[in-house]
Length: 213
Image (cartoon, rainbow, N blue to C red; front, side, top):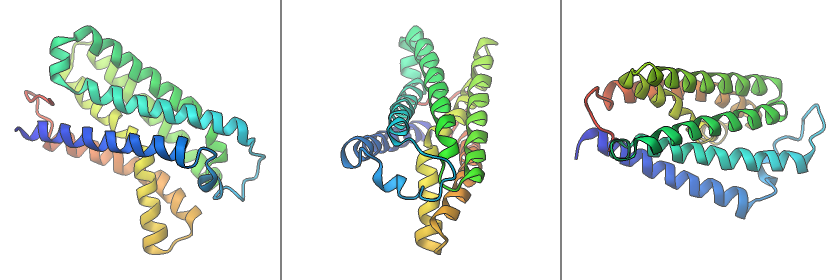
């Protein structure tokens, strides 16, 4: 099995496991997001919980959709057999990114950590959308190799939530920093980590002539 195929299967496994975890946590274990909202006790604006939860649910669902559609489109086997599906699925990925960005924009002012975290989320949303648009422009210009590289950079951001919570846990539980401080650092740290991770994949796993699956 090639290195690229192993990397694809690993990414696919992580994606599936994380989606199951996210859906279970948000819709079964804690549908009212009690644990998450407990860290928002110092908000400077009124949080309309019912509306926030609805927006959060939409955010979670389309974040999962982006993870699935993006993962599927990295399969060369599907690309070769179902080009039209690949194209339509790519636009669905873009739609999912847009919805995730819009819902994130609504929730950003209520982010744990206040304005600092809010600005970080807005920056992240802009970066993710720009990377995705560049990927689309590249394929429109028939630059297939560049398209896949920019899609790799874009797709890295579907793991934003996972990365933020991993860094937060490391700083809060491991180092002992306050949860709010840890979360704020994690928001900005995740941007750096995800961009770095994408570049590592492009330079070590991705090959111009390789297939992902």
